[in-house]
Every structure is written in C-alpha cells, then in structure tokens.
Length: 380
Image (tube, one colour):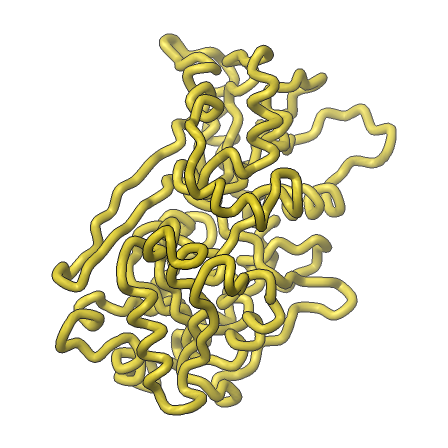
C-alpha cells in the first residue's frame, strides 16, 4: 500500500531536481520511520502503515521489520508531530453466531505519536485507478448490471484448518444463498484461503463487481476489506453487515451510509430473509439513489498515479486534509514543541518489534514469503 501512495506523491508532487526549498508536507516511509532526516517540512510529516493494526501479523510486513532493525535510533523527536495513515484505525476484530442479533466487537488502537500528529483511517488501494490516457475506468449503468449481487470472499483458512474467516458463519451463509439463487442472480467466488487465491485474479473480481447491482462485503480477518473500495470504483452498491470500521473514513471521504446499504444481521438468523431477500425488497427508487451516490464518489476513493481525476482523487483528499490538520494543530500550539509526560519512542513502537510470532504468518508464509510482492499485500 505505501508503494502506491509513494508513487502517486512522487509523480505528482515531487520538487524539481536540485530544489533546496523546504516542502510543505513530507512523506516518510514506515521502513524509514527512525532514520535521521535532514530537513523538516513547513507543516508536518506523515507515514503510511501497511496493514490492519494489531489484526494482521506485523511480521508479514517487510517495512515493519526494517523499521524495527533501526530501534537503536529510536527517539521521541523522530516521531513528534508525525501523522499515521492506516487502512484501519483502530482495528476491529469481530465475531458472531446466529443466536445473537449483533456481533461481538473488540478493538485495538495505535496510539498517536507525541505532538498532535494523529492517526487517520484511509481506503485500501483499489485494483484500478485513473490514468490520463484512458481517463476514469468506466462503470456500467444500473440497467446494464445483470446480477443482483456479487460475493468475492473466502470462507475458511488454508485447507480449512484455521477456522472460519471472520469468526462467524456469515460468509458460509452468503455462499449458500448464492448457490441456491437462480442462475445469474448471485455471482460468487472463493472458498478456502490458499486453495482459491481470489485477490490474485483481479480481472474476474472487477468483472463480477461491474456486472452486479450490489456487492456483498462480509467482514473477515478484520472489520474492513479491500473489496469494498474495488466495488465502489466499479460502481457497485456495497452491502455491509455492520458499520464498525467503515465509519472511520467518513470524515475525510464522505459518509459511507449515503452510498452503502446495511443488511441487518437479524435477516441472517433463522426466519430471516437472508441477504439476497433483503436486497430484493429495497424500493427501486432507493436502489437508484444509492447507485447515483456511488457514481458521485468513485473517483475520490482511488489513488491515481497521475493527477486529473474529475473532482479529485484519494491522494488529493489525503494531502488537503493532512495540511488542514497540521494547520489546526499549529494554530492550537501543539506543533512541534515537546509535551510533558509524552511516551518515549520505545514505549510507542517497542511492542511492535516484540510481538510474538503469529500462527497466521506461518500459514501464509509459503504463499507470501517475506520480501515478495508489494509490502503490505492483503490476502483474501
């Protein structure tokens, strides 16, 4: 994920070669968090954390291992006023069974660095993005979508040995609904993690999302998922089963409830209509409104390597809101002075480097060896 944002920032905002002026904002790769920096920006610095905080095993991320190798350089001054962007902030672990009307939710929060830097949730990078040559990837109109819903989600871990993904029967129920639906009504892909590497076939995923009115987004390892943002870019109305996690991007990227429908878990319990039954019951006028809202925000949720996305893109949103955040902090006197009693660098970051080996890392290691592929790649 940081690679995508870094490439977009470098391509669109890098100063001319030989420039000696101080930048307004500075992007610091997570791997370089503790490395000495020659100059300080006028407003503030920010970094991007690859994974879902405290939900995905941090040892999977090469940039975190690189950061930990520099702990001898750890000082509060290197972190003061640094903003952190993450795909989950905080992270949520959810579980549910059909006897309960609502899921059980546990959260884990990354503490803000000293000096008012802040921690902000941002969307996952989408599989497609704006290119100046071809413009925005087109999204089919509502009348051209032949399927009611699409489901791209694995159900269980490798060979079924690590239990149900999401710690609930929800994904199994949705796949069962799709199998029982009339042909073409529900497009489904994915069963076992490792046996069906669904996110390595983005062409099929995008085609399914572009062919469907609704995209089912059950929670998984954590509350949010990449497919949600891919679906928005494809013009598909996301159907979620809880608002936990999705609320965290609202302040910067708009109220997700305007362009998302929530399927009550009550519908997934015995006697309920199921997800497909609930979606079929929505008035056509409401479906049309939701689809129009999705169309209005789809450009804003993708990180374009080139500028020019009509109405702006996710990179524009990040830069504008980070600058505003730092201006407000400075106006309040919070930057860049040291605060009394602030946590030390090793208190803030040391627990990351001491995190014990997570069994999930062993499960994924044969398929995603350290250093292979983009840092912070998500699976299923």
